[in-house]
Length: 219
Image (cartoon, rainbow, N blue to C red):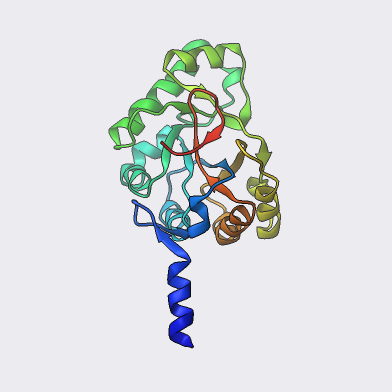
């Protein structure tokens, strides 16, 4: 009996090209959602990446430039784990309170720090706190960046519980994006249940399109 159960369990899993084990049902997605994690990379990044990989999830990592410069190996690890690396400013200021030259510095230095760390040239940009205006958008566009906010806020930055973070992810529908962060322990703990919740809705973790700003099938 144990042998039969083991065979059934193995048949229920597939291995992606990234070496990530994922539920077989993920091969038939009824839609895609964008899982995003802000404020890395940090000492918490390896555990976060392990949790995502172990549960067959990919995500967009909105990195701060100062941390990408300080932790280049973690940027490379994000890429190796199959994640997409994006721009979240250099020092996480309130960009709408800055002049154009300062805004440009925040964006351009982050582009360079991520590229130098092996993260490629980001095509997505998330302004800190979701605060933006026409100047921020115009400068981001000059660097080929699509501005990305979010549809659902997990509130993990506000000490949300594991249950609350899972429930927030459960509200996602096709194409939508959720805000999470690199550092909360509750977010890492929620990842297995997030994977289960999305699979139960036949939703897969997708990439965020630079053209539409919505979650789509990975290319």
